[in-house]
Amino acid sequence: MASPTVTLVTAAPNPAVSGQSVTLTATVIPLGAGTPTGTVTFVVSGGPTLTGTLSGGTASVTASGLGVGTHIVTATYSGDADFTPSTGTTAVVVLQASTTTSVISAPDPSTLGEPVTFTATVAPVAPGTGTPTGTVTFVISGSGGGSFTQPLSGGTATLTLSTLGAGSHTVVAIYGGDATFLPSTGTDTHTVSPGPAPTTTVLTSSANPSVFGQPVTFTATVTPNPPATGTPTGTVTFVISGSGGGSFTEPLSGGTATFTTGDLGTGSHTVTATYSGDANFAPSSSATLTQVVNAAESRTSLSSNPNPAAAGAPIDFVAFVEALPPGDGTPTGTVTFTLTDGVTTIPSVQPVDANGFAFLSDQMLTEGDWDVSAVYSGDANFGASGVSDYTQVVTGA
Image 1 (cartoon, rainbow, N blue to C red):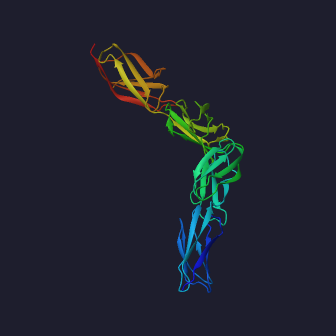
Image 2 (cartoon, rainbow, N blue to C red; image 1 turned 120 degrees about the vertical axis):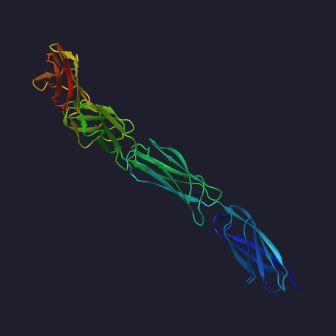
C-alpha cells in the first residue's frame, strides 16, 4: 500500500524585485520509509506553470518574468508506486525594482542661443532587470529654464533648449516610475558661456551696376555664427562713399536691414554695413561692396511753333531732354540745333534749363522745307541723345 506524503514549497528570494528570477523548491516528505520519486508541477498565479523532477525528495524550478504583486505558488507532487500525491502552497511577493537616473547635457558649456540637448538615462538597480517606461521631468534653473516633461524611449528621455541665459543652470531629471520600476532622480550642472555670440553680416545690392537716378536697395543680413542660433536685433549702419553717399542707420527686422537710395552719382562707390550688436549677439561688419553707377540714357524730342510757318515769320523751336527709365533726374548741358534747307545751314547751341528744355526762338526762315536736328550733348550723369528727322515747313510770305 502506498504511503502518504506531505509537500512543502519555498521561494527564494522572497520578496523579489521586478525582473529578478525566483527559485521555487518543493520538498516531498514521506510519511513512511523510503524516498518519493516522480515529478512536481509548480503553478504560479499570474505566471508560468513549471515541472521539476524529484531528486532526493526535492525538485526545483526557476520562475522568470513575474510581475509586481503577490503570486500564489501551488506545488503538486504527482506520486509514484510507493507514495501518494500531495500539494503544498506558498506566496511570492514581487516588488518594484529600484532605478538610477543620470542626466547629461551637450554641448557643455554652450554659447547664448546655442541648442543644448539634455539626456536622462533610467536604469534598473540589480538584481532588477528590464527597461523602465514612463516619463522624465527635467527641471532647469535660471533664465530660459523651467519644467519640461518628456517620454522615455528605450530607457532614455531627451530635451533640447536654445533659450538658456548666460551662467550656471542646475538640471534635475526626475523619473516618475511605472508599474514595474520605482522613481529616481539625477542631477547635473550646465553652463552657458557669458557674452554675446559672434555674428556674420552679409551685404547685397538690388542692382549692380545701376544707372544714375535708379533706386538701389542695399540689404544687410545678420546671422549668428554656428552653433549659436537666434535672431539678432539692433541696427545696421550703411556707409556709402562718393557723391550722394553718407552714413545711414536702419533697424534690423527678422535679422535683415535695408536702405534704399536713388541719389548716388555716377562712378564707383564703396559700401559697408556694420551691425551694432545687442545683449545676445556681437557686432560685425560686412565685406566691402563696390556699387557701380553708370550714366543713364537720355531721350531728346523736338517741336516747333508754328509749323508750317510763313516765310519771314518768327518760329520757336523747343527740345525736351529726359531720362530713360530706370534712370531718373533732369539732364543738364546743351542742345545743338541745326537748321538747313540744303543751301543755308543755321547752327545754334542752347542751354538745357532746370526742367529739361532748350529753346531756339524767333527764327525767320525762307520758303522751303527745312531739316531740323537737336542733339543733346550729355553730361556727367546722362548720355547724349538727339533727334534728326524733324521737318519745318515754310510757305511763301
